[in-house]
Length: 405
Image (cartoon, rainbow, N blue to C red):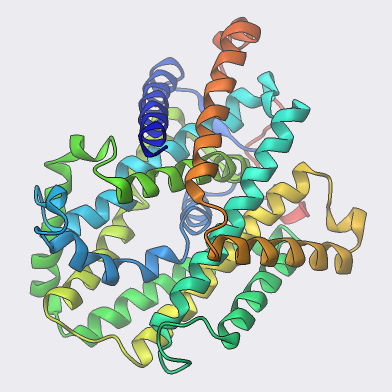
């Protein structure tokens, strides 16, 4: 089974990267415009905070020791732990989001592959499953960041309540699209504030930070090593990003604000990677200098983590609810909120128990990619190759989002 999964993700990555190259070359100068476009920085904030979750906050300090241990993890020995961490989250990974954002902006309106009933059902199962996986990660890691509650390892009742309330907040915020902009900008602002707080508390100064961030050069010097799975854990990450890719592209595509294709690719590769590099470099300084984050710093990380989770769940709930026509307007706000909370909290518990695994969801997404390519090749080839612009109805009006719900 493990060998089959490795083949699936390896094939998926090579297919996706090939499509990135093809789309960029074919539609190099096409202006990409979504249905409710926003300015570039707002779009990046929406993409960044929707496309990342609490793992960004909670994982690195626990992963650095693993990446540094040459005896138990010799496959990581080709570079330093910071470069490994950045490689699992940054730069090349964001090309997947470029591909899906571009597809849903420019190609899907002509192809309508995701409107095929069977595809729509499978896609929404993927969205709901990944949504619950995000919440389960948050639940699993809470004890390590709030050791004052419980024994620091066991998930106690208080943590279930925190996760339940987080899902409830996300379900409520998903009732109106105006919260997308508010949540995304707030998340970005809180994340920036957290980085500054951690930097000041460490006493690293400019010199210490520069020394730490310099280690990221080990990623770019070994970029080819991050394309295919390094080991099972890297494979887990790659499946995770594939599971996210379609739905994040489907959600964020509506906000693209007139960038050309190559500008969109460059923006997605570079702009989100900058805060990631800064954040990981600050945390790496904590690791290499054995600085504790207990107390206020852990609490600050939890607050930002909760905001990230609410933001991620908000975008996913909004997406599958729209796809299934289970909107607040149709169901009524109380029924809409209660139904989403019940489904997601139940699935969160299933992921926590390991009954469900994100690798399975990611594998399904790889097959969706393949099915979409085959559908275009055999059924929509001429229409797609004739595309020269975004759909006519998508106009570059940044005020549209104010009137959307």
